[in-house]
Length: 183
Image 1: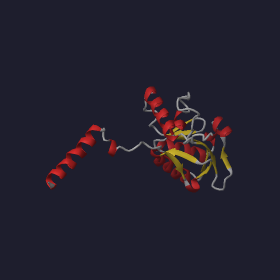
Image 2: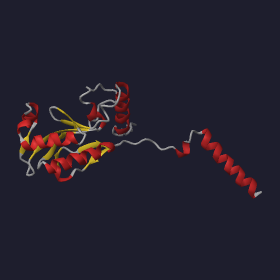
Image 3: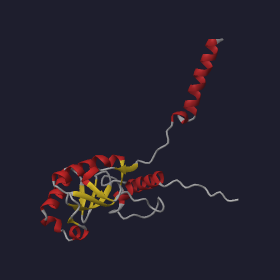
């Protein structure tokens, strides 16, 4: 009798796992964007980044330290109003959590190169800024003028894959909305 009960349980478990597409072992995808606490090499806005972008941010911090600058973040992950909202290709890395917009400061918080400086390409005449931009690009981090640094993951996606990644990320990371309790 015990053998029969064990056999029924065993085959029942196999039946449930195979006929429910692994429902019992299935994990729900989670938002991969989280706060990155960059330490004293970063300032400005709170950095929201995809977990796969964090190693790049650590490299950015190391380069900033070596160049004696502080990365003042002006923008990071961008939550859209709707997941299907149109995004320019230049803004896509932000919508995926794979980029930051920034200015450069000295270690005490004084301006080294702000948005105007970055836009005018004056960073090329400032040794600390040149050190930083050249340093991050040598480490494989992309720099898009005037003030965007991002990883290569976005550049390797086709247009359709990039759109799918954007929609997926935006859906998973959208704030949870509580239903109205009327009545």
